[in-house]
Each structure stands twice: as structure tokens, then as C-alpha cells.
Image 1 (cartoon, rainbow, N blue to C red):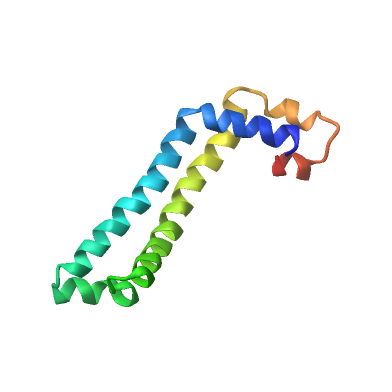
Image 2: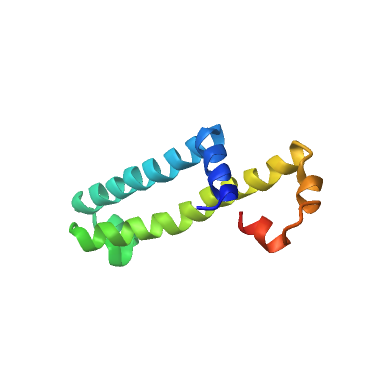
Length: 111
């Protein structure tokens, strides 16, 4: 891992935003998948009809539900973390120093 990526990883691991976003994504997927599994096993036909193809009480239904939750929740969670990473540079007033470095902007954005 490059030094820039390892530095950003350390910043994310030690920040409150990184901890809360990771907990919300991992915990949210587990809780919502379990709730959908309980809804399927409740036997109420209106709930089963709303769940669509994921309305089975087996691994296929659980993974289908988890994939849907990850798609929606991941977009929100990763978007918040990405906004925090770039916003931190502006709030700390270090963004102007990034453009003075002798590396390309693509490398800065990748890091």
C-alpha cells in the first residue's frame, strides 16, 4: 500500500466518522436482513408479497435481501465517508497545499 493510502486509512480508522459509518453499514445490514427474514417467517402474505424475489427463508433469500440493503445503504454510507475525506481537506485549509505537490491530480484523487 502506498504511503498516502496508508495515511488515509489510519485517519479513517481513528476518526469518529469512519467508526460510525462502518458500524452503521455492518450493523444495519445485519439488523435489516434479520428483520426481513423474520418478516418472511411471520407468514403474512402482504409482507411476503412486498419482499418480492427475496421472500424465501433460505440463504438465497437472505443474500438477496442483504445485497439490496448493501446497495442502498452502502451508497449512502460510502458517500458520507467520501464527503468527509474531501471536506476535511477544505476545513483544515490543506487543500491548496495538495495542488502544490509535484504529483498529478489523478494520484491525489486516488489517494
